[in-house]
Length: 134
Figure 1 (tube, rainbow, N blue to C red):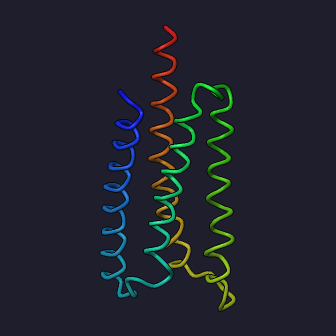
Figure 2: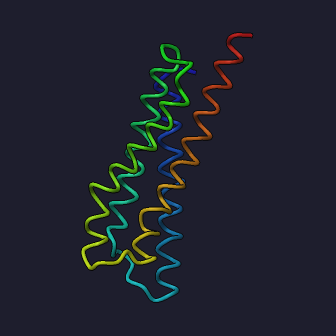
């Protein structure tokens, strides 16, 4: 499978999964009577999706050159996501002196979903690399 093909499948699947999660998230917010688009929820989903793609793209491109460091690079990607959270979202969430559950969920849900998606795909890359060696 070519590079562009793998990246396109990763991205289109990530968009689908994150879009579905976003719709479910909004549905739950509406059911419990909370505002749908507070807490920068849209930005949280978009930023986590973009970071997931950037991290996956970097790992995919470096998979042969730095194959023994893929795990560390993957953890570095998670660190990057947390850095973005603390720089972009955390100050706004703490502006009132407290981070509410909806604020936490607005960032954490897309973070976890994108992390799981990345993990599945990085595991696939590593499996394919192992199969190529055999």
